[in-house]
Length: 101
Image (cartoon, rainbow, N blue to C red):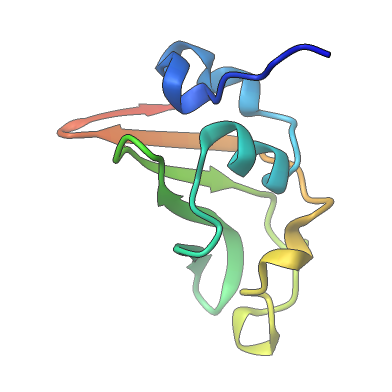
């Protein structure tokens, strides 16, 4: 079995490999805190992804396709609903620098 070093520990160059993974897989590999996250939603209450911080303090946004989940006021903010949803974009902010994929 191959040991997996979290991407948050390997650096930003590996972030592009997150695209296509499910949200839980991406959160695990990025070492995002599953207890402290928030749903990114656009008007009106349409979930578009998950945002949180890595163990090294970077802010990461995982973007999903529009319309895959119920509206946030109808339960679309529940992390368990994201188990089969693929990441289509990622933004990492470290200090004043942001990178998007």
